[in-house]
Picture: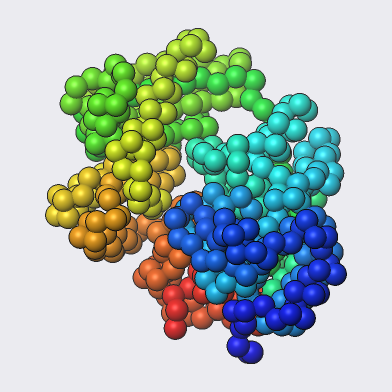
Length: 466
């Protein structure tokens, strides 16, 4: 493997000028600066940025990077929180934000093919007109790109019922790190020919190939939804309810959790009607046909009841739905006010082990004298662990680093995984070998070499450095 250039040769820049119009290339440091970071607050300055609008341009630029051994990092809108789009070795950023067209919309076949630069919300708005939606719904849906959703396998609350992008993507068109054009997957709801390269590329964080087109599987919009809020004395009571809810036939389309620490913060920074001494809260939504939905909601409510239940409410009007969700939505602004530079991790454990996780996190909070606020997608056991600190304080940063180390160890002892939807990037790269065995990592590195033999695509990501 040839050494990678961290400065761009004049011949390479001249080739870029042949491939792209002047307005589609940035080379001045002050222009490239904003493309060197994502929502992780990490930053490395790239030497150039290009904005392809076609598949053929992506093919050409990947081949050019191979020819001159230039590191290449593809990115969407930069909403990721793990540093996966930070160009560690500088080089070239390929920003896909201008590849934002619909290739084909086939309502009768329940799919839409789009370029990766379209936002999640743009896709939702288009397919809603024909009575459909695409289930992945990350919090940043209004701004994040479809390509980014696929690169991270980002989901959101609806994953508990409808699955992640891997379950909702039929096929991809892409360019490998070697510059080879591939089309993987199908246009049909069934297909078993060959290895499932579609699911392999989804979640690979731009280390194997650059997605230039995605065929997304659509789901009919439900006729109606019902919203419930349940409040419990303890996290153990809430977790017991989650297990009960998820073991009966009516699968909620959202099952969100916040712990007692989060409830106390909401109470301090917003007007709420939450009972005193509340230990945990569940927000539950059920969707489907209007006929029978009341009965479905009643069954979910019944399964949510146990000895630790303090209060449960079923919204009857749109205003009541808004009021119930307002409590949950007050959390993020409160967190930003208290700790604008908090650390947010997204670990996952089996739902039956959520109490042990929260108990362990409370002990670590006390041990390191760092407030920890927990909320997330309870139906999947996907908990967002928020360490509140001032990262500009060296002592707090040191404590947070050691605390995170113990958090990841705790998650793995509970048969969990280090990330549910935020990805690995840089933030968790050096912890991956705790979850994956040596033989699996070797196989993954070999796959990376097959796709990207010169290691130009997003180098030094996903795997611990060796």
